[in-house]
Length: 306
Image (cartoon, rainbow, N blue to C red):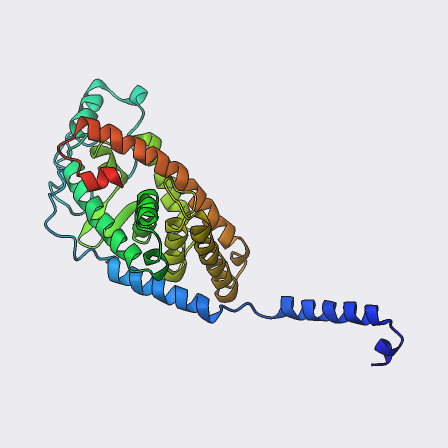
């Protein structure tokens, strides 16, 4: 009080403002009740529409792996003809053509599209779940139907890969989907090219190594879904506000729940992964159309549309 008595009124106000600001900065960050409700809704919707053990994935066409190993000149007798444990050769992309023998190149060509029927069944299964996830969200249901479709078309691949990342094993490079396991060569056998698959595999290693928790994964899905710059979106302002709310909720959760030195860079690293996915989405769309041109009777319309 004595100090305030010799200070001018303006100086007293400035001092009090500084003290309040210091108090706010030193106070622990906490999620608001609205943010907590947002997280609860996202987690609930996610759990209802994502089965990490893939128990509901049934009636699919088997994966034909009983072929020449991709990028190898010898027949792989250990490779199973249906979904199951993968052979050791199923751990990386095939070598460049300059390093392949003629037999190896013939083996690669023989393997292309043999896995496509199964991969399309798996992708269609995932798409249906992502649509169900989106339609269960309050913010999504409040949007125009046209904007709902635009957001789904733009984000489905990204949300699918975020979900697949939750079952990715960085030590083996294998996606462990309950009764089924997949490696990057399965995507090669489905007709996808290294221009997509090499950065996609790096993306999965990078994202998985962040050690995200379930709440952070679902908020990442929501940020991808509610992207206002998707082609065909009309109510940009509305969707932008939803996106900003999801982003702020993710940052606040990280700040309030995380500890350790990795906490400070976790949020920007998640944003970097989301940015990387935009490039992957563009290349994925190109390759889907290429495969559809070659195998029009195998590619389902839903997969091409999304």
